[in-house]
Amino acid sequence: MKPLLVLSSVLAIAANTAFADDGAKSAVLQEENKVFENVMGPINFANAYGSRETGPHGTFGQFPANFETPEHTHSHSYRAIVLKGQMTNPFNGEENAPVMGPGSYWAVAAGEAHSTACVSDTPCEFFMYSDSAFDFAPTE
Image: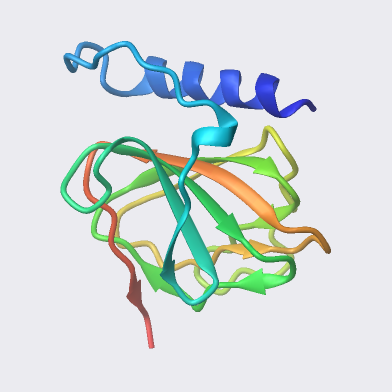
């Protein structure tokens, strides 16, 4: 699937599931203008809209090839869509979690233990969005 088609799908889902009339200003963020910053270890984030530190946001994420986060939880739920690579998101120690390619979607409920992984030999990119700030609390 072409990245532009996937991104269009991501934005359509985000627009239809959250922020129905949030006063957002019309805007465009082109691929070449995304600014990724390292947030922890090898994980990079780039803001699309809002602020993941304080409230509602849309954020692009990058994981290196064959990388998995430690099991963790979040204070608030979020949703995400795979843009590049192949990812898994096992919940509560789940074995054999489904492999998600570009265009695949996952959601994480507040407080649910999970890990997120890039299981491809190429780096992964995803888009996540939430009505609330983003945090990360390891379970161990």
